Image 1: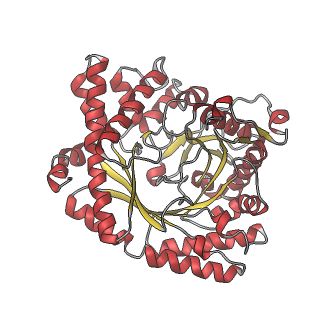
Image 2: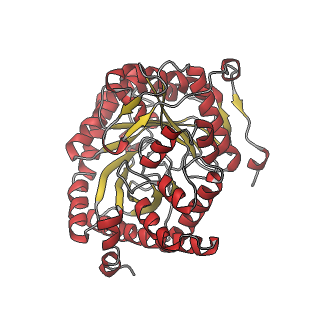
Image 3: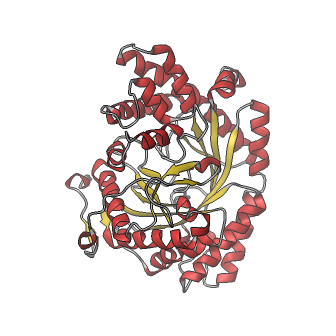
Length: 454
């Protein structure tokens, strides 16, 4: 049993160490909204989202006030829209019309973001999938709250290189269409491999087809809490270090469990999962990079960084799993550059490069996240980066992702302001050697030999 006394124990974490519930996300199935008439489908989507989520924001705010735990975001994820619109949408613009419908619904209920403008194309692209993908630049440039994701590979199917090549072009076009806001549209677009279908974190959230009609997922974060705890075990053995991380992760997850159960009860929607992810913010003291420094590195990116991150990720998961029976999503440590002041400082000092970040993604929760690159980077180069990251996920049987922003008009050394939780980012250099002949091949990279488990 979890009670309010366990939350009271964490008051210090909230007040001094940046503990927060990063998001309450309501997942909503839109499969019953599908049909052949676009306007009818649009109306059903709007009505269902606004009906089920009408009390989401008010409930989140009430719980935050009563329990004294900040709940930063209230969000919605929906069934991948490529499935919902397959019969009704005849052109990419038809899909963009549904994006605008979702954007209106999200505004009506007052959430921060709505995810699920997505396609799952890990083995191949149906015509409806390709139309949705080609509509992404229009959708993201003409809405404010829509988040989009495309899953291009998995351990079981391999990597769909046709989709990888297309996504390089789509990211470039999205950057161009949103150039007046420093290519912000790309900050709401992520390319995934092995995407989970219970992920409450944007931009990769969508409501999986194996889920119930509606669920409540909670994402908890607390890098500042972990850093503060580790200050008390400086110089101690790895055993002591690991025990401290696990104990801290346990306490953080218990807070999320209480919030999730309470939100589920008040909204009369089943509880899905807790995602315990050390997701940083631009606030000082709320940084994964600073945890790595507390473990013993001068800067993130120094030799030993990948090992330290692997240790951190593993102990966070072990502590979280003990605290809740339903831990899922992307639980572990995030390393988004623009959202982590310590990562930003490491890039600025030269200790952290794109190649080192790629190595770190082998052992962390997601992948290359919120990275600004020069706006003149070739689409094929972006596709090559996506392919590399997808290969890490495919071979290691883990979720990986790329959320990369080629900022139009910016070059290495410039800084880009995104605002809010998205923070700001130094523009990082990219390897300029050509890979277009590689990504230009058609078909897919086969699944690895260890995928043949049955």
